[in-house]
Image (cartoon, rainbow, N blue to C red):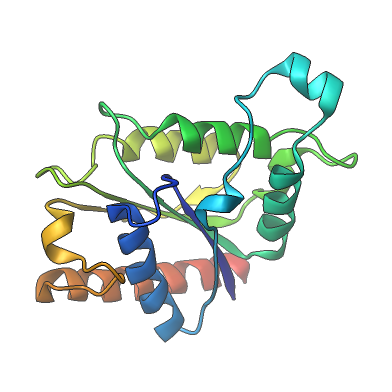
Length: 189
């Protein structure tokens, strides 16, 4: 099984990048091959139908779609901006959903399992953004796993390299990775 890990932030050392690294390590323990999207992969102009008509889908997005097509699952780790997931992530998903090469963009997502997580320096851990992200991913045709995780005070519990500094969070991530992997494998048949 292979999962594409998509961050909602371009910042190199964002709290969400740390959480992405932590969930990646736990997924690998479960035998999942992870494909991490890095900040440099998240380069696309603001979606504009006229721009799409004149220039087509950006090459960076075509590359992301190829990676999504090759993946069996999607894991999204996002910050929360004013109660929502950031425009960067929305824009990336909007571009990815555009038709390329005669195929609907949503075809790369169709019926694949998705896991959503958030991290924040605040106490709510980005939890207000996750229902909106769940709705967006569902609209794209993904099967979003019922469990989700928001990590509050993330700077205190996640080290710079994605190491988990809190025993409780470590157990939550291990359980989430194991349960999601089981869900994804059942969905795949």
